[in-house]
Image (tube, rainbow, N blue to C red; front, side, top):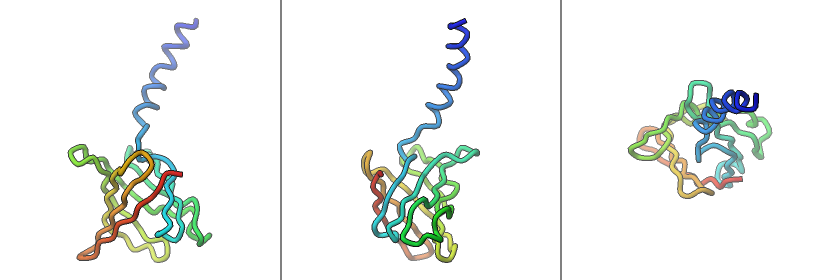
Length: 120
């Protein structure tokens, strides 16, 4: 029966391993109104990011990053970022600087801005 239990647990372990990503976790940026984002997998397999901490309490719970998909050739996430104060959306890319820092670059028309977020 232990072998059956091990076999039954194996697919779950494999699925969990597939759902692990270096981008997932909590990330903090001083330059984004002292915001902490939690990046995680959505049900559709893309990454999303929700505000879990901010100097503006009304921003907590806001879905800031949406539909981020992994580009294997460039090793980045690409999707959409929305501003919590007004909901305006722009294109976003996220790249790993190292295991403790990511760079989020937001682009809309000719405007571009990058933020560094540190792992919490």
